[in-house]
Image 1 (cartoon, rainbow, N blue to C red):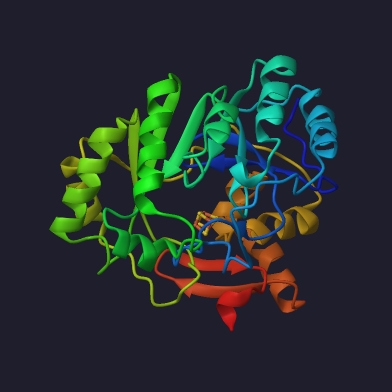
Image 2 (cartoon, rainbow, N blue to C red):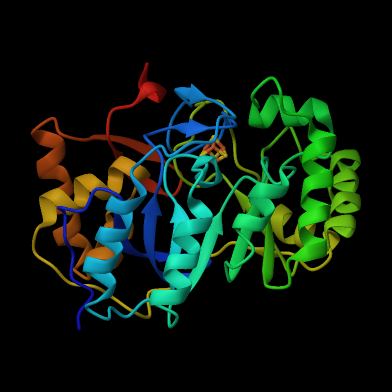
Length: 318
Ligand code: SF4
């Protein structure tokens, strides 16, 4: 089948071409911006609900029902990915959902994109064990930068988080990836990069991805580092990879552009190129749809070095 778009879904989105995972169906288990962190570079805007409380934020049976509805059509996907606009391990039944996917739809790989801050909790570690890929974030080598960059919930301690990552690696035999987001002037100094490298040696991930700002972040003063600098840091951090452009080998089709574009830019700011890749339409057509939505006041746009990004009005504007 074609990967058919269905804008009626509430908890699943895409499939979208992901820079790390190929064609990925997203599963969003949290109300917008419910997170343990409030990162300065977050593309989803400020964290409205900064919390460590784990609970059933969205009804697990409804998520399963949407997954069944879509996956029973046998779409061509590389991954089903728990991600979205918050921290997915805050959902208390994430383990139940991963088990559901692995038992009923074993042909699909499952990924969890987490900030890793709750992996100090043995229950969280156990719940994500069956995922094929767990990607965690590590942007700071010092507690000071952790606070500056990630603005954590006040009860989170960096040392405890690192211990959690190390403990998770000890029991997790699938792919553990770490993403390091470099912010100019904050974690790009030699001393900080050395601390990050020391932590990475303890965590022993299978892959390290390096990233920097390339779409609007929460704070407008956040600046990216040069690509050549990222490449140098990649060599220093034990052969890390610089995150590159989306894999567009599998494309999707559909006609409900308005709904789909709104549901896509709601989760992350996108350029016309991003939208054209997701919708499998020409970039000029994507731009036409985006500009129409912009003219109608339904979405906003902002110019960045990588191009014009379209997004839903959020706190970053105020
Ligand atoms: S980047 Fe991720 S971890 Fe940081 S605030 Fe946004 S959703 Fe939370």
